[in-house]
Image (cartoon, rainbow, N blue to C red):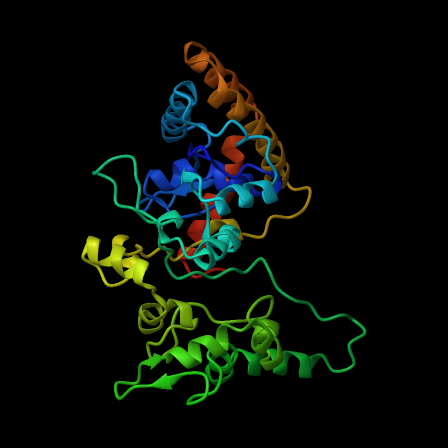
Length: 345
């Protein structure tokens, strides 16, 4: 089968996996549709930035050379995953939670040379990558209590109890000695048998891990004792789950975990801006919908255009994009950032 040099995910609401790329190449984490200046805390859109133009021109060149997936802008999500699972794709950008099924399928196939390895790619050496996220608080998702609830205070008590470290450890790690082990330094790890047990989907459902690990109040990052909330983010567990092929790559790069390839995340007390509460029908909501339509339509035209027409297609896009209330959108998120920096969430 023919190798696909580069592809991308552009389907439906997942289009952000394509439009976010210039932001990451420029050395920023995923703050949504804006980049936030570390000094001034001002939020600026990047869809029509020099970074975006540079990236789209690169794709335009790849397309002209025959090195871009010709189905990139028309395939659906399942077709995208099938393409990744085929092992024919050389390069792509996406967030791990979106292509995990493809990764698992390739690992199960037992051909490590077809698996994917994340790399800290940026525009040039002067840029520090920021793919690893800083501590995060997402406040625009949650649960509610209906007006007909008989004991709303008990519901709140239940949530408070759920978020206690002892219960979060139970949700993510299980029972000490049964599902994980603690060494003399207080570090959590898992034996091969424990890893196999907690990876079993039926066990996870029966124990309750799958019930509470998402869509409920939860802790992210690390516990007060320094252990990771999620076992997969604990170095001791990651090392134990690496296969021979993984260790071969790690040895070649002179590292012990894949995360060591990436720069440490810089502190961003507002992160992420995309978690701001944007009301339905508000100017910001309307801007998001209209700008997404424009970006989807024009990005495809820019990338697939004859190189001689690149500048014209780019100008057509920026004209349409700047006809929207860009300044109002930027000001909204600048205000959000500055409030969060001052502790106002």
